[in-house]
Amino acid sequence: MSFFLLLMIIFLIIISVLKQNVEIAEHWTRTFGRDYATAFGKFNEKFPFSLTEISAIIVIISCVIFLSWGFCLLGNKNYWGFIHRILMVTLVIVGVITMYNASVAMAYERQPLPLERYNGEIKKEEFKDIATYFVEDLNFCAEKLGLDENGEIIAPYSRDELIEHLRKEFERLNDDYYSSYTPKAKPLITSGLFTTVGIVGMYFGDLGEANYSTFATNAELPFYIAHEMCHGKGVMREDDAQLLSTYLCLTSEDPYLRYSCYYNTLDRITDIVKLSDNKDEYKQVRDLISQKVWDNYNYIYNHWQGKAFLMEFGDRVNDWYLKTFGQKQGTSSYEDTETDVDDHGDVVSLSHYQSIYFKMYYDNKS
Image (tube, rainbow, N blue to C red; front, side):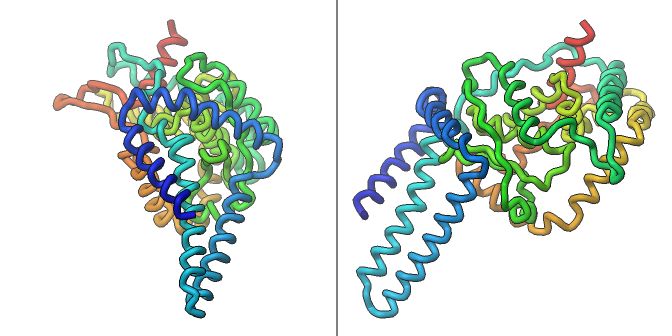
């Protein structure tokens, strides 16, 4: 057993060293990593429940039993029996970490996301028109979907159908940077537990499985699920997954997906209006947002009150995890980049989300 543990530790060290090279990380992600995720993803599709949850429960219970057994043996001065069980638990933990590094951790160090963005002239006088264009589409989507008596957006189809709609959206990605396989996201049975620490979705590379929280509201869900599916496509960096989700949902013909994108990212395109020469224009744009949208936003705000009471703890753990596996910005990588403004108040470069919005606007206007 100690021999296998040593082999895993050596392999883990080798992987950690190799992934520092971008070319190796890229090649590994497109070959072994992609084949691994596809094979396990297709296998997991056969089960309606989350294998990640089941596996985690089994591993945790088994480790607790073996640790308890080991300490009992230690109390009876059976030192070898104690060491044996500690080694078994260590082997399982190191094995999980090693497989995670081998399956998806390489993707944290791969080449940048090949997503085309706006890089043309930035004109202050057009900020209001651009923001207005998307606010009007937000209102259209809200009207198309409608609200229930509580203010919740009415989803036009079931969650299983939503996942299939999203998988079709991913088919628009024709660059070999992305895996051709898109995982089928599954609901978390323990969504309530994950909600307390602010987790609304996750992707577990060892099993190639994407999961989402059933506690998320209808407006949030498509964007969150798309984010986890992005990881299954080989896009592991959180900022890249956020950006790709923004692109796919914003450019979709489905009002439901666009609405979800607007809820999660629209403030980045309305906020830029504050940088125009006419400061009143920001208020004018915000006033255009329909009451239905505000009712839904209030519903979402109230929905989450008191639920994620351990969010700060969850954020710290997630921050540590991301930095450990190569996401140097930690949990801040979930946020959009800053709009670059010079000393004269002129926008020098757009944030990542804004660059997607601007490109769509000018593409549709041309």
